[in-house]
Length: 111
Image (cartoon, rainbow, N blue to C red; front, top):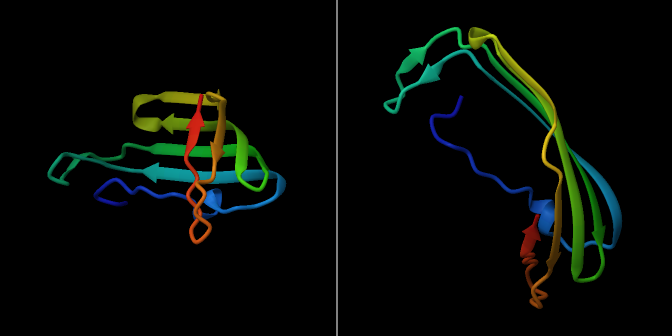
């Protein structure tokens, strides 16, 4: 378990490509204890489990990218007797590579 938030970006998402791609991103998180702001265990036997799958359809032209994302998953918190599963918010996005050929920079807008 990391003591701080981990932020990351998939480096391939901003690479220039051609064509249509179907991509999937899988993640699984578990936690048995919660910590307070000082990092001390505040709740033991928390029993948190989260599994997600993000399905993504992308279209790449030479400079333009269009994408649709559909997340689904399951979250269970055993200590609170809570469970949630199903389809999440579907996102649509579009972006255009900046005209710098030495590096790929892809600003995108999602709704």
